Image (cartoon, rainbow, N blue to C red; front, side, top):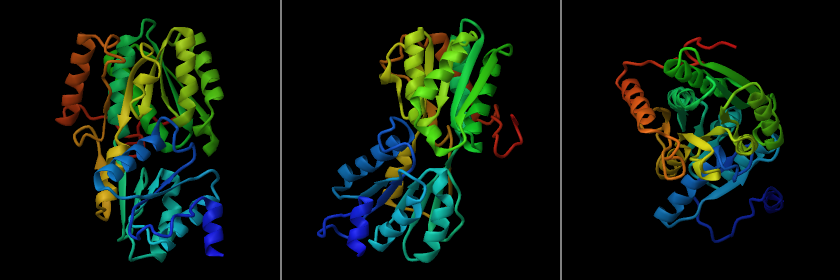
Length: 322
């Protein structure tokens, strides 16, 4: 019966697979969302290549699968078990208590248990930098933000972005929309495109999308309209060279890679100083980022790392309340 359930879940692994291998559980939006989940996948794949070992993984397609999948990974002896995404926090809290001898890790949430490492990011710091870039690149003085699911975590991105835009241009206007209130908001490129078109119609000429797979629709709309877009989590500059001004990279790949090697119970916080967030510059967007823009953004980056600029955190500083 156990093997039948495993197979039904897509967890029917080869009998020869050794125990105590890492497991990665992706959240809604899919492993290949070109953004958050895919960054986690890339980190796991790098660990696999470097370690010469296999790992287990599973993609959540509906919320009811979270606990079932995590328990099956634990039953299989996977160690550590890495949950990708804030929504897995409550599930991990339950399952980790039931398997105290296994190590767990969660990204984007905090679970306070002796066998769990929680990894969170200072998204506001990276978003501040791309907000600056948006305002500096904008010809209209109007920039946009499109979030995925309307949750405090995505408001952190929005709040940091607005601060950066206003820092670069105090008169900048920021228009913001959220895609929805359910996990489906992470994978709705059609809706993302519609929201982007509406913002462009109002004079916005640069949009930052922090929306998982939904962002793909935003970027396509920017290409169609001859406007600029900013990617998120993974470096998405290559998706539409000449359209993507930059990407706010959130090194979920590095987090997963490090967690697969070793977990240390407690909370790990990754910001600009730790290399956990940054803006992406490569051959795909080099022509869009002027020397002056880069100089100003890098100066702000150094000032944030040095503590001279404090970027308010929506979730901790009662900032940017919407």
